[in-house]
Image 1 (cartoon, rainbow, N blue to C red):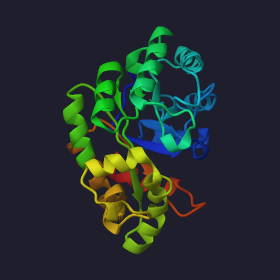
Image 2: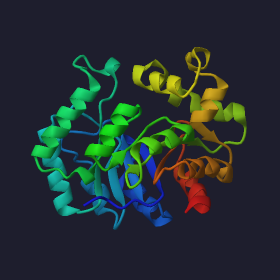
Image 3: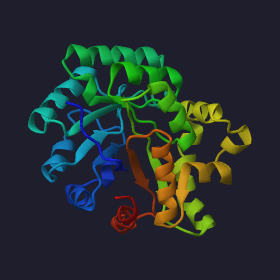
Image 4: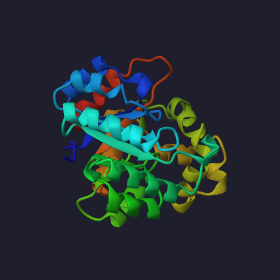
Length: 277
């Protein structure tokens, strides 16, 4: 059963997502929470979030295929979906060659991982792929519910929709900073882009495909690049970037709210909900 997503969700590192927070997010109208940080293994953090909510979808954004064997992930998926049918999406991805000594050809590895999930009975409509380039986007189209691109502007969303075609889930993550001063906003947003993403081959390759120059991509990233990848401003201004993704073909946009270290994110989620939901 393919989970049903509303248009707006929340993306956050698994360490920042709690049952108390997701309960608040569901009440605000967010339809899904995406768990970052390569949650894997038994996926034990998922059930408490689903138990705390009534309709919220929980997705992994993403489980790294190098970290956990497909059969182990399939077992966790079966356990979760038996208790919460239609409310869990297994997002999987190949991660980065710099992060794994066992990194092989990503397309072949992903295909092999999907073969095991298929063999274990995990429905394709309950899987999404972290896909950036055309080849993995086509694989997401053909063998899963759809794609969850990360660190992409609306221009990529339009290209991805053209490849995926109609009826395939497209859920690009979008970083946002609720700060109207551009210098302060970039000071918050830039670290979330520069480290590690401007040192990772797959993200750099994708940004080059979108036309960014080496000068833009040199760490810590040009102002223009940071502004393209991190929406900044007040809530109505930031909402324009979210709606640009939707207008470009996204079905659902998980928002990653960036703040100063230790700041409470809930007021920001409330402000965004007031204009988006």
